[in-house]
Length: 79
Image 1 (cartoon, rainbow, N blue to C red):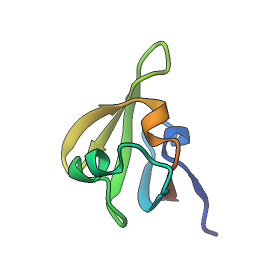
Image 2: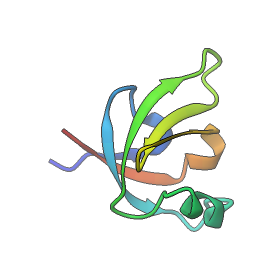
Image 3: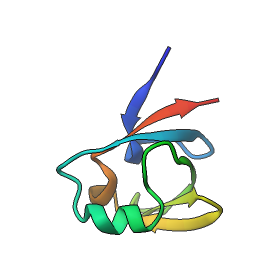
Image 4: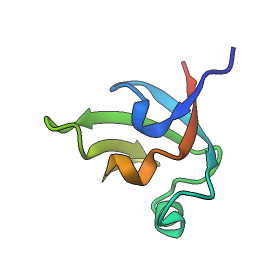
């Protein structure tokens, strides 16, 4: 079963494969420069106490992103 969710809903410790960067993602180019491209594996590392930003492991680098930057990035949870 394929389970697709927005990246900002991925629980801590879970891994996912990026499926789609929606046309509504802003700034799309910045996210792509950070390594958020289709088929990339990402893992949620930690969430700040306020819930924003969220730290992700992307291609070996830990990058903190705001929820509003990634709410339209669709991922597929993997085991």
